[in-house]
Length: 247
Length: 86
Image (cartoon, each protein chain N blue to C red):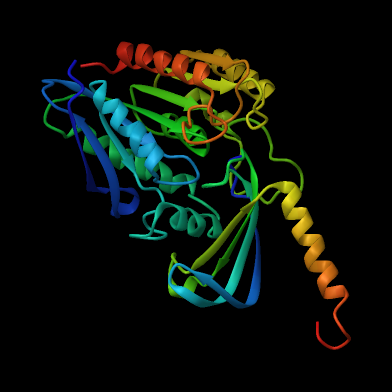
């Protein structure tokens, strides 16, 4: 693989037929490829997640990251847009599913697509990756330390998101979960509870919980970065997508 | 922590952002991952004027200890002001 790619900003049709901004990275010189919808973390459609999107293209996948905050703050910088989205209470689950569905359709329609599309999400996007995979026909899903898939938010917290573990029987594809043992949201107990729910539902999944890592260990520009967990996690992703998405 | 847990209040005053001084109408306060501060979680405050768009924002990201120190300093300053000023 020569890792050649092209990356650009495109417009896709998301939830309710809305046109939203998205970041597309595609491999060059590859005849057939799978697709990956990248769900950004809560800080938004930022440089770090665009780098992740390009990394998928360098490894032979077409990757598309919808700007989940586009409607809230079109054209704004990622941090300003994240602040607006937060002030509005965040991304509604229904809208998230519509946007990921639109992104998946866009990827399947690309010339060279093998028709397979997976999803990956980080932080709040980890929960949203699970949500999307329980709501849409997909081929592989990765949940990177998504909080509140399992577990009631602590009493008194006016959270806009609730647990969605009850959706496990609807999971449409294999799920790879990557978590930090030092994380509190999700805690190792919550990860174990999701593991159990998926096993009981007969859903293919594999979870890895890394010692010495907490939340956001993939974020290379944050203190949470843990090189050993991140390197192994990337390898797990390549193995997993290689089995279920590769060209 | 990855939540949308946010305290929202109305404020009156001004703040200086990238476009100069703006009148402030709202503030959000939350504990979560920072955009820039070198810490895993920070107490973040966005001073906002939504009517002027997303960029009408003055943002700070403080460690928990410094945020508490700031809160105490604000209270102490207001409490010690001469009668009738605050």
